Image 1 (spheres, rainbow, N blue to C red):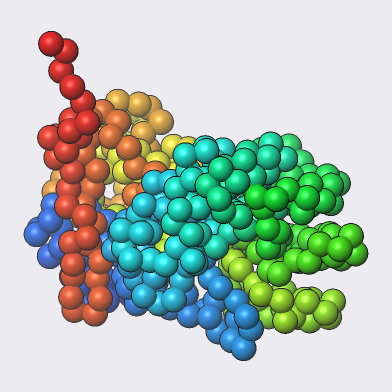
Image 2 (image 1 turned 180 degrees about the vertical axis):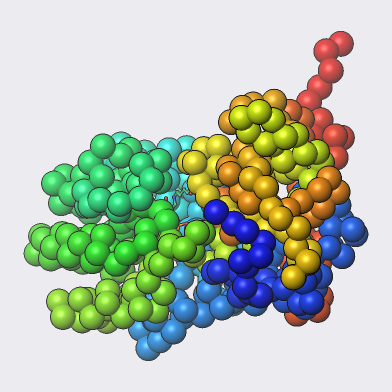
Length: 433
Ligand code: LLP
């Protein structure tokens, strides 16, 4: 439960967002000023927070042959991609649309890897044309189709097979991906045969192996378990005469939404690298695909209270952000802290308990339940940890335009996406004659 009185000056997990004289800032920019200028709901990202999250991985990999491929499904806004591209990241993509976004920002196709269970022939073609680094193949059927598409294009596709290590990431079932019952990857037992097939197909070039076991993982053990199983497989594949250049250990590291304590990226990698060294794989090329841990706590969503609706059983605080902007609570019962932009210190009025909900016509449209807030219509609130899987999952449900986005860098704030208008939403449609 959140009480504004109990909040420290900085926010848990989000040190680049802090109160100064009772007002919430992103780096050196007052969030209320941004809300006045651009309206609400408004996503605000801190560039310093993004680079600090990335730096933890870079420290972890110092002296190693490693490439960080930002899993852009977490947040694919062009300005966000530019920050990561300029800092040396490649990208993990899952669609032709994501590839087009990377190319639009000037990101290098040679640092792009393509994951996903349902790549179409058209997307394979597009990726081969662009010259991406590797396809992470998720089924035997995909191997055959990719081979055909590559041969027809006169190319050889570099592939890595995503193996499903059957490891429990101990996270929400909707975001666990490395268990036998998940649709992802090729089962551990079938992987060696799949590699033999891939090595025999003339349109394919075996490059690596990969696995991704889930998202919002808060402990090291599932990674260590998955690593051992992947290395067992690499030994078997190489014993069959198929060299594996790179190991891709996916993404999935969690963040602090509400007191979770995932290992810092550098500490996690120290443990994983120790195992890799012990098993003689320390000098292999490493790839990783982090998403949430790079951007999740670098963003907040600023929203305004529209109405307070106290009731007999529940009190509703109706805000102007909704499940179309912040889908995670409705989809995964996810928790995001909600805090006021303005704190009154010792004069803080007594909070009441509110269900914070949006204007969308669905009972599932809630952003937080039972939140202790002293708030009034017109007040501005920030929904925290909203950098990942919010804007990228936003929709136009109820014909609501997508929110605007601002990237803060020190004292500078750049509007990286203007608010979507009704005309924007109707642009692709045609009226009947
Ligand atoms: N690589 C692959 C193959 C993935 O499937 C994913 C995420 C990632 C990397 C990045 O995982 P991360 O580091 O962000 O955990 N919408 C959900 C999360 C879905 C994650 C799907 N795959 C949420 O809001 O919690």
